[in-house]
Image 1 (cartoon, rainbow, N blue to C red):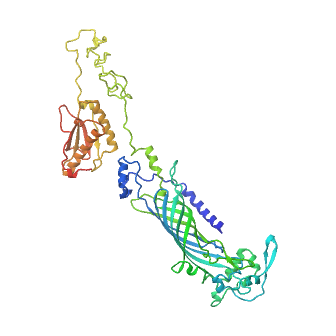
Image 2 (tube, rainbow, N blue to C red; image 1 turned 30 degrees about the vertical axis):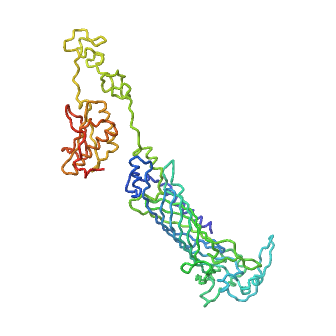
Image 3 (tube, rainbow, N blue to C red; image 1 turned 90 degrees about the vertical axis):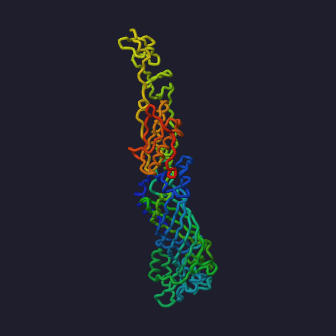
Length: 579
């Protein structure tokens, strides 16, 4: 019977595998998303975003609610029927990416029938009281294989005399119907959601174990209600030879004889065991395993098999062992039951990620390595070995100290005579007076005004060029990573032009909120340049609340000759100041 159930589950598994195995799970969730972080873990989340703590906060994850149905079987002294129904439901919650817990309720109906005759039922209260028909008939001899393969002829009367409560020649066929309910708390361990070399696939293996309580009520079918009140079945109508045929033949004969009432309470522990709602209650332990196939981020289909053990031998209403020539004795094992199911699980919860057993915790680590967003990267160091302001990767010449250079790091030669300006004693030599000597002096007399004449000095606007604008998110005064990268280039230009200042201009002043936000924007830029880039505060001019610009933009420009202003201004409305 167990093999039939295994084949059934294997068929269902193969049907689902073709679709479930190919489904992939993408990125788990955005670790920067504060909406999925519970309030109690927000301090950790803030530290993580600020770069002072390496680990992101565990997100809020959804609850799983599942409903399932399948096959229920009791493993006891009486063979069980394969197709007995079972129903269950559970609630599950993750406490980490590997471990979760669930509360599960089970309702199962188990049936069983022994296909061999039983004689030693005198100590079983259900059958001793109701028994089978006591119709007298000549006792047949049963052919039974003895030790060593010899056949021993055993009279049914011998069984009778060793079971005084029985009627002579009376036989029965043990049967039962039990209704089982249990409630258990289970720990579930996920086995395959942490993957190192590929994204997580759309199926999930898990094992579980737990403890709980089982309530059961077992009855036997001993009375033929269609034949009259308290009329016992005449199992003698099934001939002795029939009992040695194939099980199906015996089962068909019993099915034709018996109804489906199961009216007689089976033997139970009486007052020796606790009761719940008038039924026997026993503590129980459960183990099992399952696989779930992801249908969507909200739905998955699960196949499970679980075994439940209780310290009781009366789930099937029988605890006495048959002996050929002796009285019935207690069996030495306890009953258990198996529950194989197919179920549909639903994930519930707003502003929550999927249950953590569906997520791969390595997703964030790998994505950050590939495309850093929160990783603290060192500032790039661009070497300039000759100190001319042009980094070595673009510098085409190692220039002596103090020599002005062009954008390629090549010494300037204003008159084009081949002598750099820093060594040229005749700075502007007419072409017709060239070539020149080692001091840059031409071969023709030089006018009085030609010596030391240099080109006009460039203004700061010419030296620094057009400076970029800094954009802020609406209503926010925090610098983005892109804005910080732009400010790093501005800082480099300031360091290369120590005589220049930069005017930091913020816009909008139609109300107090706009005035304060404009001040916040300008203040954020200057503070970053001073604190992070190391530029002196006196290199900036603080200018906020101007008109003609975007309220969420700060413009930077080189200060004009003689232009000056404060580098620090008190906030206009401190009570509205943004953190």
